[in-house]
Image (cartoon, rainbow over all chains, first blue to last red):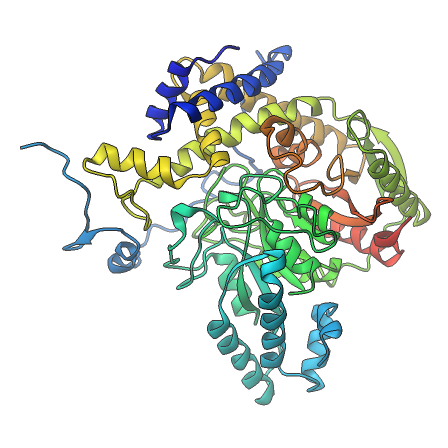
Length: 99
Length: 485
């Protein structure tokens, strides 16, 4: 499984990670090694196997649902407290649209 | 009180001392803080301490004792909590530069329950960044040293929580386990570590790494103390829809049950190639202890074991890449200073904030979920996960518990394996299968290697059979199994 610098750069962009070419080169090599290893899963015929996304237990279908009653939600000021920039009850981010 | 006495105290010992007024909860907390802080430069088990809050909690316990109120199950007990678990008003850094200054706006349910039971949290423990790693060397701040052998790692990712108990700073601590992050450090440090059944303990307030695999669980020096802590934190929580609505037994009260006649399966795949000879020998000695107790030990097979590491690292990285998308520079303290535009802010914040292992996993996870690769990797891994879970269901038709090693080798030296991520991943082989199946597991001390390094034995039981698992572990401890040679 060959992973090129361009591929790993594309993936890092999808993941919103700005990395140096030197780092990308290293991650490409490591990914190649890991993906070569995980290819061993292809030895298994899974055509009749259901995927397991979550551990499930027997129980009623709505076992995980609480009653639909209004209750206080998380305090806005508390939620904003950790923001690097906020104002007027909102999170603030750099300019999105050029004038 | 003398330091030696403190370092080996159990919850029962603390409660006896408090009732007999040999010490107060405040004195106990002061002692815990004093020795933990004094030795932190050397061992690095803690990332930060909370003396004011701890002393206030201890004074509340003392006032209760003075007023003749009964002690809670953890009344006055000093506790350490892994820094991926939220503690209201205190920093919760996940050992990441990105969250270095983040203060939790609420407490995890496990923390709220622990405090309601009288537990006194003295500080937050070091770990691998966002719980990703097997050696604690991925902490953005400093590594943890193994209290038993300071040139060695304590294991990971909950290395600080294991070291805090092994070093005698606290009798119990909380960690998190996604692929072995409680059990493996417990084995490296020679303490007890429990991964409960998936859904047994609410993850509300546990910073998410891989949501279909994350668990909170206890560390302790005795099985009974883990049983006590587990009962406190277990049970349904409306804030976590994955928490199970199953009754919580009084694990500590049930410990005395006879283990005679229990059927124990030893997977041949857990004693094969790659296993250190000393670890194999100690686990055999451990099994002999259980045979003497009347357990019926036989070989079994978990045929898909060799595929577990591959399936696990596809699933956990995929889930991590999604969970860690929230660190975007908008909400959680750190924003790159080089952020003229929104897109720059995202990219630079994440590029500068995450450490190498976290970045590696986000890249791998993003890749396996990306268009054209989803079926080949993520979906395939989920199907293999079904096969691994089915191996266990089948095995539990014939046996009551499954026993083997926790890690292929004892604690290794700092830096020894840091350069090869795949080699580090492969060392998780024995713990990962249970994580994928969602069954509970415990690591108990099982003697030492010829070099004096602790070795752990893993006991796995079926979903929600923690009580039986703890009974076996307790019987093993009572029979001298922890020091078996």
